[in-house]
Image (cartoon, rainbow, N blue to C red):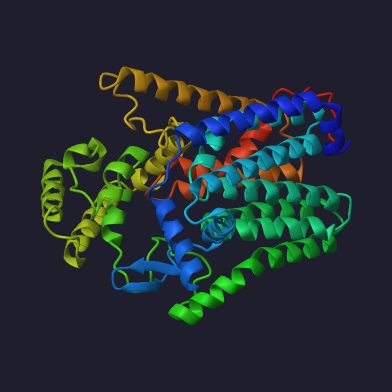
Length: 459
């Protein structure tokens, strides 16, 4: 059965679920829209691109070309602003609502192909009513488009893998998967993790299949389609900045800009949750740093606490310089030498758990310190409810994975993507919960599969 036929046979189900999904997203757009931070950076690049034909930023000293952000989302803003008016962020959000509903459709189609009709229906309903993905339609940042690209890539790759298991290349599916990954990388550089997950699944097919030539051809088509969209951006950066930069720089800096690598390395020796990212990491150079907000794990001794406090006091009156940065780097090296297991094992595990399990309320204007119930009991209970809903969804996904753990190469692709992305994100010093949101198509798929009968058959 095709997905179109499934929708025709269940018109009322899909119509009501879609209307509920639209209503949920409109609630976010009307009451919880956020235009700040990265949204303004992307918008400024788009405006400069429209007005002056330069991919850059408008600074007091004039227009300066930049490579601090990949061009995917600014290009999307250029398109929407050109059609619906400059700085029309409401139009951006409404277009993102449509894109997010298309993502729900792809998740449902994926469930139909791998599990069956019941899973497809439930997956569509859960995806349409998922507040964690719906929330991002009201924020002009990359997430909604990145989630769509990830879902499209997974769907096309699954279709391609199924054909390979039958001995056929089906190049159109691998072109679709590669282009989806490539566009996703132009939105967020970590979209490239899908390349590794797809190659892992292709290796599984290569080992199990006799049609190994077809697997090699499919891999080549996929890789060519993936990296083709990156070529113009890479050439532009070489011509403009004389650097080989196919992605955005790790620390979102233009060539020649000072990056406090020592400070960032030091934060990585203790940071484990988004609260510290918001209160400490992002405030460097913009607001006074408060050593009292640091968790106890940031210090191994009173002498270390005194040294950090002194550095924070200096930063209140002077911007960070190479000498201060070197002091932070020395602290980082000492902390790693004292407790390598903490740095390489414990903290990455804590960051991964934080990104997956903490309440996803960072864009709702609620207190990030959700556990401090005495400060604002009402907000605290909203946070707890959000956290419980997130946990329930993850448990449903785990049940679905256990029930449908034998999906062949497609299962390796889906789980490999989640595991590889989580492992990568656990190594960074700014563990934002939104970074795992691109894994939610897999979560929503398996949550839908949890409600399917084992006797059901995929399309």
